[in-house]
Length: 259
Image (cartoon, rainbow, N blue to C red; front, side, top):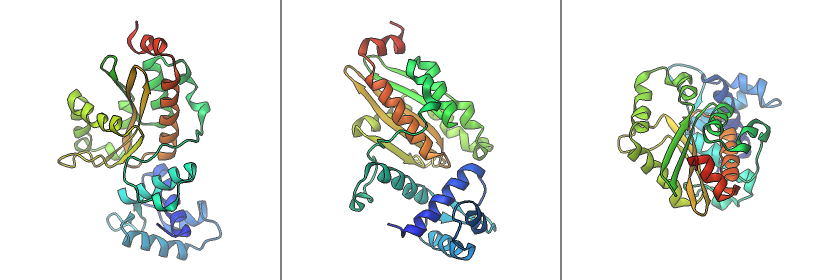
């Protein structure tokens, strides 16, 4: 658990880094997020966050960027704030319980009709990430939209960073194995720096939720960089899963499979 002020500094660091993809300095945070707190105080808090492993100083820059551990604390704080869990549960490992509050619903109205391709495109467009729908039952299907959205992120200008994800997408069995973990949990899943045997996907995060209404069973997910906008991704996936799960079985089958 961080102190309240250090958590606010971490939250501001993540929010600014999501926007700029550049190291963030204490003066920027003081001017844009933490008015009333001196740059010197923020600098000290950033230093503590770095010592504790939640922030890092790339190269010789005076600014900081969040680490995967910092993102994890940030995401935990988002979820805990919205579902009112006790502080004793903040150390819980993944999967984290899903967020109940839905913000920004107006951006996802195209999902109401639940045309598969259009819905995934709307989900991708509204978050800037790649949307994936995997149905295990009654018929196996994998659909995705938004790879170009994902590849437009500045951290993926180096093709070597993207190749592991492209290989994953070209191997349905590997992608299925990754998404099956969400079915085992029955909960909301946020993986920050996706772990695999060779740590090849450490530059990516996954936000996913199970969709389930008998007999329909599957997962709706967003793939993005670790620098993704987690607030928006969590809201969007929660809404998409709720819409899909609440539709009647026949309507869902027709929309998904065309029959």
